[in-house]
Image 1: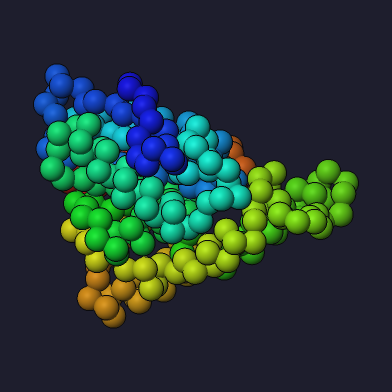
Image 2: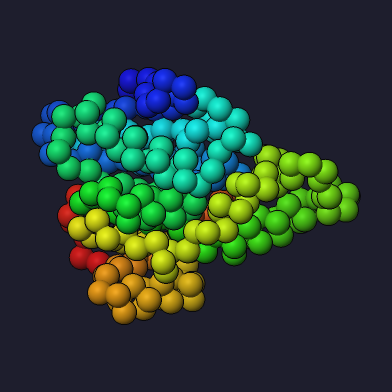
Length: 261
């Protein structure tokens, strides 16, 4: 694995590149992995490392990175915005192609990363496969979900709901007003990934929002394949999809073209 910094010299992004296992023959396409929001980053890190390993064993070069203001990338979360993260995806996509020498790219985005990737694809990012892994379908609903989780966490700690002064905090991370405002603009029914050859949604369970999205895209002549992956019964509900080995296998099959879904 090769770690590096890339992108704008004033806003360097941290990335990790894994070459394919050449014994199996390298693919002509690279795979870019897009993390979820910072509130879910730690939970998803193991799953992304595991997915990267599976993809390299299948012959794909893999690149993953931290958005501006998150992880080991430059900047503070208070300076970030949805549009800057969408631009980060475009920069990471080019870096993945440059490092791998490939001309084609597929992308896997989890939760918020899926919504960001769809917007990037709609703005011109050319993809073979776009995999939306348990995606955030609507930004406003996602904010409400995080707020409800924050309230439950506060109550579990025997405190009342948090009333932050200044920059609000959700689930232990800064959640400034500007970021909240830009996040509220995300809507997969409107952010059509028109530059992807194939789009697949991999979910942990059947959700009305997924079928509504599928129908909305169908009305706009955009096909969305939905595949459900079994989840472990021993993990908490917030962890099930992120720890699902079956979901990882489904994603690898989809990108490898071995899916019958």
